[in-house]
Amino acid sequence: MIDTIEQAITRLSKITWSTSELKKKSSELLITEYLRRGSLFLEIYSIESGPFFSPAQVLGTNLDLEDVITSIFTEPGKPNLLCKTICLRYLEWASLVKKGEIIDGEYQDIYEPLIKYFERGGSLRIDQGIYLDYGYGAFPIDNWRERYIKLQAADISDENLKKIDTE
Image (cartoon, rainbow, N blue to C red; front, side, top):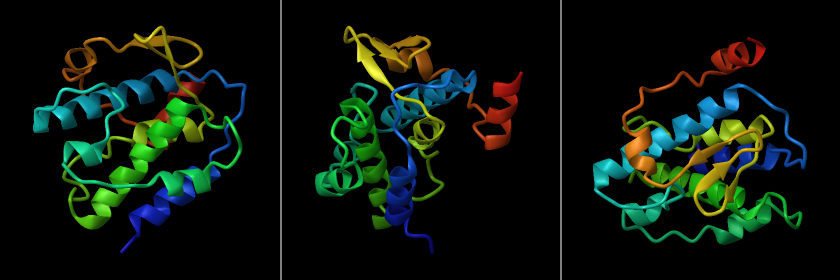
């Protein structure tokens, strides 16, 4: 059986956090898919939250993974606070899967789209408290659940992302 925590740590450790992003058409798809998955997960638990919620808190579990995330990201300021928080939430998700509190495959991995986005050179920041800025555009995050929950699932396979980027 694959250790989800070790796999998550390895993936996060390999991300190169640069200051210049490459513009990729697939970025919007990956971010939208994260927002869709997150809204569906919160809907199941009837929780009101912003888009960067703690899955552990949603499930009423206390996890302290700050030391782990600090050991992964040792360079000051890289990644930025929002990206670091998202990576921490990804580790929470992996830990919940390992503990059996989230059954692997029961829900789509909420964080997979954003981790892929980061692996492909992306970064995020909050602009004016109401926009999720990805460098070449922004997503409004007020009423985010109502906006994204209705969308159809997107194909985030590497093949599809490559196809989108080369079109």
